[in-house]
Image 1 (tube, rainbow, N blue to C red):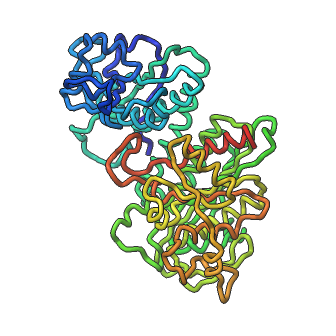
Image 2 (cartoon, rainbow, N blue to C red):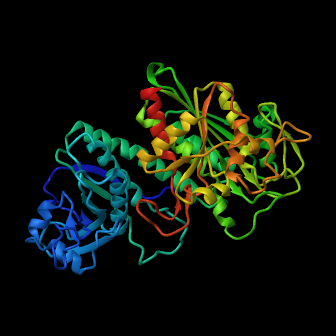
Image 3 (tube, rainbow, N blue to C red):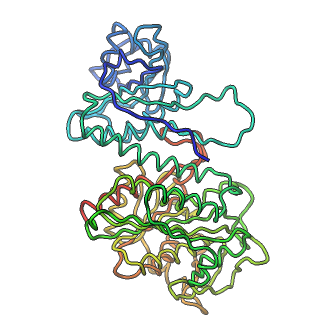
Length: 523
């Protein structure tokens, strides 16, 4: 099921003369310093890019917006009928917060503003964005942010409703971004990149939002494999027979409780000429639904466990963006998929599982299933050969307790964790490095196997760290690695905000793409 698409293009026509249904401008809030004016518009300041619109309103635009309740707060959208003052039917003023001192708004502020505005303008087929863009070295990053925000903010999952929804306005179909020179090669390249990356994020969201009865491991594998083949990627899909024969004990154990058998999807991108010689592996958790198995979860909120494959969705989608962007580094994606169900064939607490790496794992909690399938995929990635390994998963509720709903936890090789943090800052997908303490690992010693899944003595304490410590056991010494826990940011259950809509977010597709490009450029 594919969500409606949005097209994106550049335009250098005077914004006041654009033949569009709505024109978006930016407004800042003023804090009341000595430069602030008195009166209704005293706390509003138009951002650059809106000059011709303001002139068409004879200088009364900020006053009118203020009378309509505009404050310039981040993400606020106030719509004003133009009544023929400019070509567009509606002017939409989106808040950018306080005016930056001596600089344009940060890329993330622009990304969120563009997303909020395009979402608020659903029902307007053609929208133009006249948001502030710097004219210096920061211009490409700002343009990329605006373009991504517009495409992601306009996302809406197609859904399953059988009756027309009269009050449901269609998402914006076409977005024009106003720039000084629409023919500039750098600007055009940024638009192309934004379309590839945002398109991948939107597809990742579609996969996460799909009902779990329609996206079980075999169908999820087919969907990813089909999209990957269309993109020119190499594709290998291991079914249950191949997994059993290959010794993928972790994937098979988790998947054996479901009538929908598990899969492992491997996607391969090979750069022309061999690229930089470096190799990157991306691994993503693909639990298409997680009941907790025999250690069953509470019923409350379990419906959101359809999102427990968000890591695999992100890796699969990132591989499609990589195929389009063609970085000069070899990249391989590994997507282990299973459905964790309670049945007479489920794996049990107390089971000892022989993993792909040869290690024996004592199962203490069948709800710690993600690390079981990831351990097999990580071991396979290391066996195939890689220099850098990035793994992402909705792994632990402990991530949400520690860092909240919007900041991912990162564990692994310290230098690589810092690169993940920097990539998150650049893309608007924040992540924070966390430790892997020795005492957590000591508590995972098993009396009967090489390691247990969890530290029973710590119970829920350090829950996020237990996941990282376990996965570290399956990474070979020569591989730099980072585990990105997106239990919170992978799925947004609240109201839409910025360029996040309700449901799957697509985190961390943009981070993974950024990291691959960083490795291609810098090793």
